[in-house]
Amino acid sequence: MSHDTAAARRISGRKGRHHAEDSESRLRDVDYSPPLRKAIPLGIQHVLAMFVSNAAVPLIIAGAAGLSGSDTVFLVQMAMFVAGIATLVQTLGIGPLGARLPIVMGTSFGFVPVMIPIAAAQGLPAVFGGALIGGLAMAVVGIFYKRLSIFFPPVVSGTFVLLIGILLLPVGFAYVGGGVGAEDFGAPHHLLLAALVFIVTLAFHQFCRGFLSEAAVLIGILVGCVVAAPFGLLDFSKVGEASWFQLPMPFEIGISFDPAALVAITLMSVVTCAESIGDISGTAIGGAEREATKRELSGGVMADGLSSSFAALFGAFPQISFSQNVGLVALTGVASRFVVAIGGGFLVLAGLVPKLGALVSAIPAAVLGGAVIIMFGMIASAGVKMLSHAAFNKRNMLIVGISLALAIGLPAQSGLYEGAPQQIGVLLESGLIPGALASIVLNLVLPKESRDLSDDQ
Image (cartoon, rainbow, N blue to C red; front, side, top):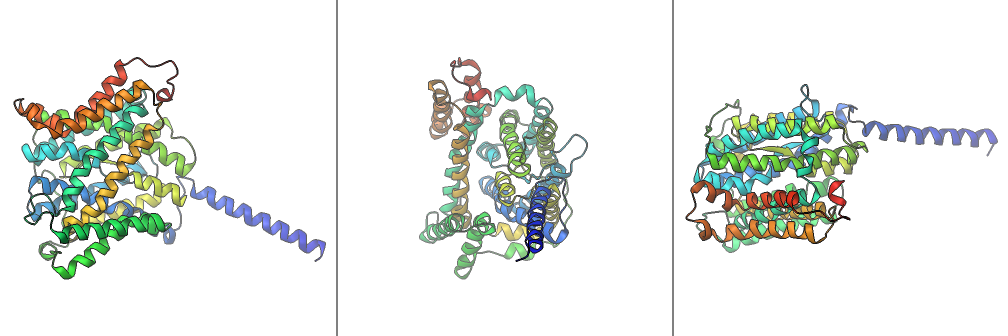
């Protein structure tokens, strides 16, 4: 080999490395817009990663509230439409609103333990009234988030997320049995169907890589639906009745302002800011490989809040950034906000097609149950991970222990407060409200140990 040839190859190799580094650098740039042939599939992948989770909340709330099939379809449709609008606001921004980061928005699971008793006792209009005011409170936190961050150190935010996962698990297992109020609750075919979905989801999540792992929940549910179809467990009658296109209409279900709902959901909205800040920070670090800026954090939380208020007007539930999509950004290394904006556009289109909402609502409860118990368990484990950033001294262990005791014990013994006013009973029955309040108050009043530095960072 001649000297000139070897030198040419070394130069070519350096150019190739520089080209790869430049390409990776572009992908990590939140303002980079990949070619559509790449951006569209990547955007759809984000939608698939969150689609089932986004639909699960309205399905669960509709079941608890005893809604008709058409109302359930409407809730699913609005969940898609509002998530798309919220994602576009979060990624593209409107004035001070939006983090302008690759953040996918969707319906928050965190509110489910609080919304179920309110929906059952006061009705969905009370839920939407609380969500409207709660969203505005969340936006205020976004404006003043730096001053209010002392309320949400890791020991508080981690406890909060842990409680959400734990309190959602009974709801998930109710679906495993066939759904709340099912005449054949606990029948073998429900349990076997849920077990199949559970195993398939677990297998794809752990033994596959890339997209197959990220879409494990979707794959598990599709397998469950395919198996359920020959046994007549899939009811597509609502799909045939639903129209192909329908513009969303505000106040379709209505809004009312119940004191208990206002207090419970507003408190939840404020506490949920900790989760939102964590997701925004995680997206910046995992995607763009840098810390989130003050403007990104403030704009992101404001967008979460005002999107939740907007959602309430259109019959959808509070919005939050989806953690699984934060992980997807870190996994793919594609931090372009325009890619996620394309996914938001697809969600808006999905919300304009009632047949799609009807198709999602046809998923058997047991199929959904086999998937959501994994999702709920992962929420609890995410809380444990957040708690790992707090010093596990006797002070913080007391905060976690008392919060768990109140959150789990009070809902299990409703006779303790059956004589209390209905508004108080609803707050206590949720479990999450007394647990979250306990963690916030105890963190403020208990003296910090001299070596307890984790919560201040």
